[in-house]
Length: 361
Ligand SMILES: *Cc1c(COP(=O)(O)O)cnc(C)c1O
Image 1 (tube, rainbow, N blue to C red):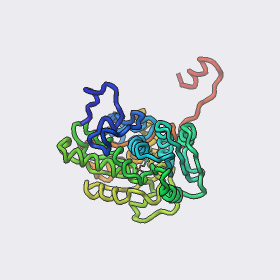
Image 2: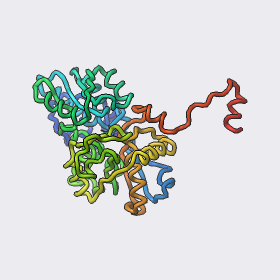
Image 3: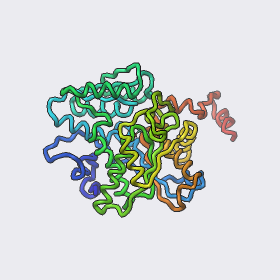
Image 4: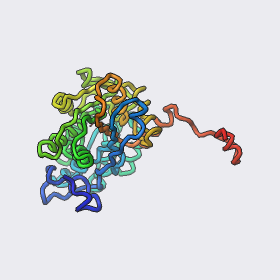
């Protein structure tokens, strides 16, 4: 269990906090930005709004250093790359957040970073992050899966370390989020809801929960419920999607790297993997911000859209305790926010009266 509060008045990052559960040695030089220890926020209004008698917690991963959960895997991947010897640059294909995290942690590790992106399909904030951290950003005329193929080919050279989801140590880092949930709640929840893109995160949480359960740190295991976007649902449809499409760019993936891991998590946990439409995602996106004060990026709202759908379908017993991971910050994708039908600033004359009139007071 994390000894954060007792031994570490300052959170040391996930590797130090869970060292014995991660593939590192006492000699490993750790590359960290003190990721992890993100808030588990009780949703006060959504259960009532959707008429569900449930206890809902949001694992708010926007509070990581680059504002998404990708930092958990990246501290592990960058630590491995920096300790390997001979590595000059890290390389990844990304829908955005992996590149932001890779670039930041590469700066920290004194390594170069190269990011291969599908041209024109990345949220503005994520591109700004990768550029600011000093990555070489290459936009290819192809989709995410094309970018991944190029990365795999470059990764065969010794000077490159691949930090994509195909790198297994990323999963090891990401499983720590499940540890944190159990450390706070005292055991696993009844259900864990997640968005699913490359399916690394659902694989990682399930691994984390199983380890805690095996070691007696949680009496139960949660049922894993994963959500793909309707235009981008290869696992649900059981086929590779050539041109995936969804407003939730972080889960616009046609051929998930951890496809098998996701299937296993769902099968072993008596869970479910299903789709939500872009409209349902955007409704949940606005709901999280308006009712709970949580501004997340569209992909992060998929599990809440899924919760609404699962509740309507009668899949959630009354009294269930549910954790939903919101994976990234809303500020990463400001274009979607301002174009999502929310109220624009209203221009009035510069007087207190005019403002009162506008407010109807
Ligand atoms: C990467 C990412 C996802 C998808 O996670 P997978 O592990 O690829 O399934 C979801 N939301 C956000 C914000 C992400 O960055």
